[in-house]
Image (cartoon, rainbow, N blue to C red; front, side):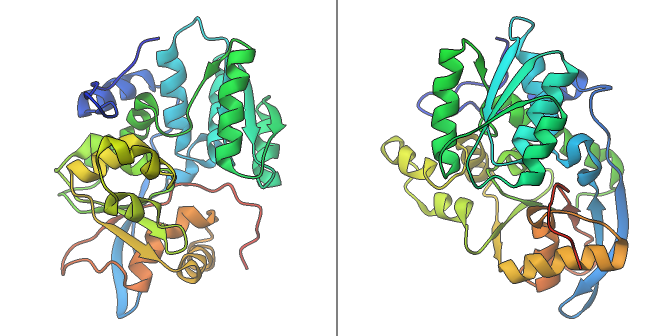
Amino acid sequence: MTGCGVPVRGGPHRVLRTDVRAARRRLVNRVRKTPVFHTTVDGPEGPVPVSLKLEFLQHGGTFKVRGAFNALLTAGDDVDHVVVASAGNAGIAVALAAAELGKACTVVVPESAPHTKVAAMWTHGAEVLWYGTTYVEAQRRAVSLAVEREAHHLPAYDLPAVVAGAGVIGLELEEQVRGRPPVLAAVGGGGLIAGLGAALGRRREIIGVESEHVPALTTALAADPTAEHRSENAATGIGEIALEIARRHRMPVRTVADDAIAAAREYLWREFRVVVELEGAAALAAVQSGVYRPDPGVRPIVVLCGANTELPVV
């Protein structure tokens, strides 16, 4: 398998801007260059200028398609069956990429996986297996299943090729937005912010946004960074690659209330007729709630990262 990233002794691979550039070359004609919409949104003290990166318009309705394609393309032609654990978007992304590349795909999902996302996996021809009640349990089963079937196991977000693929968004933003405004993006498992960090480094400030009830990156950054505590950090749900990039670039993280995220999601529908999932609205929620306040004259970039939702916005 052809990899990417630079091995770091005693730690995760370090994903560099050169890896992101290589990913962009691989992804030509595979993914969409999603548009940027310059507008204003309601903030706590009046209108706030923002640039919305409409990544929910990506194939499969998720930025994760970029990483899925890059990972499968770097895996090589010898891989004909891929197994991934996912509660939703990663499974959709890998299923879509695998179908496009003529590979079989099995997605192991926890029992809590949303039906709409499972249906999307089926639409792209994936075999879907339910296992366990949590993502961690599904992930363990995916690893063992890949061994049993002599298939290729693909981590959902903590893989250099996946991170580099997501980082292509950062290269697009350099072309689409003048200056060096900060970029706000949802944290999730960390693949998106890690990719943006790898692509942009210190050229632009990357701000991670996560829900107050699942402050995964905030918790991991506060934990002991030594190797003996790495398993404890992994339990937070943040990938080691993302954690390394966040620490290296001293990435700020903002936490927002669930109600604020839901309100931002409803606002997008009401004002722009845009439907995104809750995580897709997290970055906007930071601006609208005042958790993040841009400096005067600064128009931040807000990444709307996914649109796979089964809940109507009313």
